Image (cartoon, rainbow over all chains, first blue to last red; front, side, top):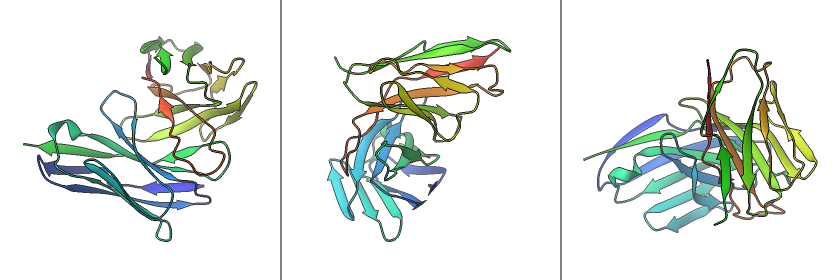
Length: 111
Length: 116
């Protein structure tokens, strides 16, 4: 099975940088996804990592260490609209494309 | 435009009643998934389907049923056996991984189910 841990809540200031951590224990691994979810809406894809290292995409970056079962999402130049829940999801190694989701980290950006 | 649609946006269920949530996609994706989300929690997998006329139980399938008669459609029925059905239900679809690739799941807008 899969077990995924993320902090429940984080607060940061507009314009700052915030790092959201995710640790996982899995019986199989075929990629890690980060999603953003605003209240009452569906999750939207932010990033994907399958190899160790950093993936950068504009203000968002995601890092993976498979040996440590660890990932983080880095958000730079925070904006008020970045206030949302951030979900870490690990895809298993079956061919069904199933992912296990963490409970999400609720980020509040303050002026 | 391609995408996933879910209907209705809000659904009310009476005690002992079965209700069906609709999910349709025109992305030509083989795989479809149903998740349940409770407040402050992540998504939990109810059922998934890799191909037409085939589906598998997820982590919390009890009290739910699905069908996959067409590639585009994957309706979820919440039966009276599901004792705590109030939640936000999300449908998703994806290309089958077939190896490591960054094909993500695409989510519909969700259906919020409330018990009267």
